[in-house]
Image (cartoon, rainbow, N blue to C red; front, side, top):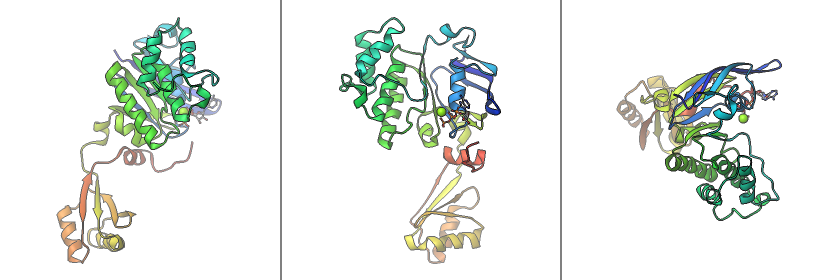
Amino acid sequence: MAVLEAEGISKRFGRLQAVEDVSLRVEAGDVYGFLGPNGAGKTTAIRMMLGLIAPSSGRARIFGRDVQTDFKRAIVNVGAMVEGPAFYGYLTARRNLRLFGLISGGVSEQRIDDVLQLVGLGRRGDQKVSAYSHGMRQRLGIALALLERPRLLVLDEPTNGLDPQGMREIRNLIRRIRDEEGTTIFLSSHLLGELEQICDRIGIIFRGRLLREGRLDDLLGERVAIVELRVPADEGERARNLLSEKFGIEAEILRRGHLEFPGDRTDPAVLNRSLLANGVEVSAISMRRQTLEEYFVELTGTSQEIY
Ligand SMILES: Nc1ncnc2c1ncn2[C@@H]1O[C@H](COP(=O)(O)OP(=O)(O)OP(=O)(O)O)[C@@H](O)[C@H]1O
Ligand SMILES: [Mg+2]
């Protein structure tokens, strides 16, 4: 049985088809990344999957229970943070958690301590939320979602607006939650590199449609897709011209002396010899598979335009 399953969910807002026929499946133990640019339909799809808004068509199930017809039982084991948590600023973090815990009949002080600890707010729990930074609020939002030991944790853009350090901490936190609490995690992001680093499986949503779903390794494949070449800083142009003339390779200069090109064609040893023969010293050649970002651009075309 899938932990979370959407079957052909769609949502229309007036003339806008925000989500169209999305089907996806999250299995127990997955860290599932829901990836898509701004306006792709992530939050709308998540709201439908959690039973917070009704789909125009399709259905969603959590632990086998329909979120529309069996809402209470479907979401009993779910913790969620959807689009920026709202807290009472004049209360401390601890009192906020206590208050939200009351809605479901109360949680123990021990559990409140534990979740504050887990998200790294152990020492700041008695401070008013109005004095929290954005990153601290995100963490408190995750603490709240975790309060009742959910078996499924749904986080809509948990790293939104955080600095790289904050993002890394949230990533580590998500790994810790998976390992220590054994929680299945579904998170959305528009940041490809983010999801690439923590997710086992991803679904890519674009203009309301799910374009791909699968294991990250299967989607990106193992094939070497990109060759990176380093030459002296002032030789970049010359190296690029040589690659173009001699091999028909269209390389891109990323930084001075730092070139990159698709790598399924010419033997790197041959390239190296040829460049050297023409007086360009190569200090490094490396090969790597496509990043999720490159895959995404290839899949969707490069348009960043919001649909
Ligand atoms: N209540 C609403 N009424 C009308 N249009 C809406 C509503 N909610 C969302 N939309 C539209 O639906 C589309 C998808 O929005 P959604 O919030 O699901 O995108 P998203 O992928 O979460 O984007 P972001 O990365 O910016 O959070 C957008 O074009 C948005 O303007
Ligand atoms: Mg959103």
